[in-house]
Length: 232
Image 1 (tube, rainbow, N blue to C red):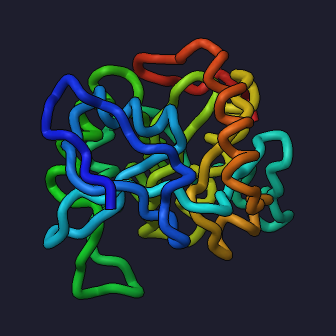
Image 2 (image 1 turned 45 degrees about the vertical axis):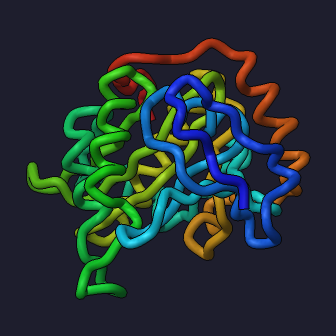
């Protein structure tokens, strides 16, 4: 297993071709913004538990959602248009991350890969304008949302939460529509799940993902606080 250098000036990762069949690539290092951005630019992301060292992954195949292929069911479209939810961008990033890390219906006892160190690290990325949150509000209470990292024309989705039916789904749809309007070409879902496939996400070989990512990174970064500028 490749161990990352402790030297803060050495941000080099091994070739993703050396990842294990499960996608595990390297161990160690840190979560400084410079290293995180270097990782994402090469199709690598951290994923580990509190009792583990930092683990870095690059799975093959890779689950991606191409914004122009977004699929929205009729029922969800009706939910979006009925106006019960208000959706915002970048109004409470840390709160969204904390709720993504909180107990879920399927894991009421808690336990998460979103450790306190991860919250600190991605909050720093948010302060630098690279990490963003999408919030869904109902009756002026935070009902759902998601967060991720944006570099060039690629958005790397990290996690979502929902405290009301369809709240996170609404956030995802409106985010992808906004990304499409801004010219983003790639929404990285990392690994496939029934939740993302119902929106049109598909598995592609890692080599194809890296090709698509390289092209997306030629587009300019959209740093800073985001606001919606689409009308639907």
